[in-house]
Image (cartoon, rainbow, N blue to C red; front, side, top):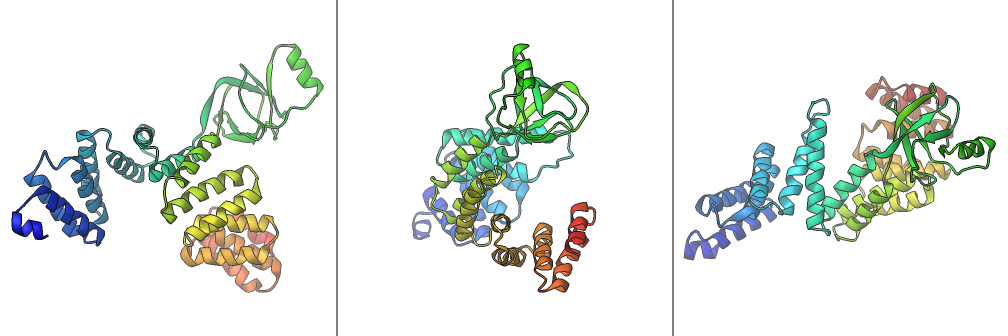
Amino acid sequence: ETTLKQCGQVLPALLGMAAVRYKKEDYAGALELYGRAMALFPDKSGSETRVGFGLACYKLGQVDRAKAAFRRAHAMEPKNVEAMVGLAILDLASMDETAKDYRARTENAIRLLSTANLVDHSNALVQNHLANHYFWKWAPVPGTVSVEAGSNVVTTSQPMNLDTGERVRIGVEGFESYVAEDEEEEDDDDAAAAGANTLRLKDAWNGESATGLKLWKKDYDRVVALARGALNSTTVKEMQAESLFILARVHHIRDEMEQAAKFYDRACKFAPHLAPARFGLAQTLIWDESYDEAAAHLRLVLGTSANATDALAALGLLEAKSGMDRRGAFSYLKKAIDLDPLNPDLVLLEALAL
């Protein structure tokens, strides 16, 4: 500020004051200073000034201006990580899943994040977003499969590198199961003699026999690598909690409940208000039959997310089974049903609690 008074409108002083205003949460003041810097020094101010301008816009709720600023920063400097991250995250947040271009826009946003990760392997924000994306993404496996009604043995058109316990999906109807250990049975021996590649699943195929179906799998190893990279790349507790939560979910879905509980617990200690992690911890405590402790965590979840239907339903069922406060239990279940009346599982839970 002294430099601005003594030397006039110089770029370093403008940017320094803008950063100070932003740090003090004076986003309007920061926006004005970043804007002045760009107006007076359109070339020298560079991409970083556009990023700062975009961040200030976002904080003020001016999302379209923020996206435009990040897009301009990316055009000026294609390897600007902050610009790529800001543009990708805002694009993902504003997408309409029913839009025709949803898939193309999603792929473009993930491409930006992947490029940012290649440029900067130590950016925890990027790694967490990518880990979360791949946690939900189904990756296609080369080749096709044939299935028979009522059988858990799948014939594949070519060898498929799948490990025991991997989660897979077959066909457009979304049949999901896990790869099971091979067993020495006559069917397998006959298939091997005929030169066929087979895969044994945990569950039997529940549809009609079919051939030429696609198979997808979850790449949880990639998720773990990205989440661990993020965990080791930052000292910000909230970001570390997000990484721990992602790791916990991987263990949870693999039925490694003790490991899941440890990661959920650490995530809650780093970010006590991270409701999804606390709900996951409650689920593992229910699995461990530590019902009182699970109920305590569910109440904490509802303290920050009062309309969390899963937490309402779980707490209602726990309290109904304990017999201590059946009226309170059914009030939780009723609220969950009122919030999600089309969910048949909630009605079933209420019936089980009777």
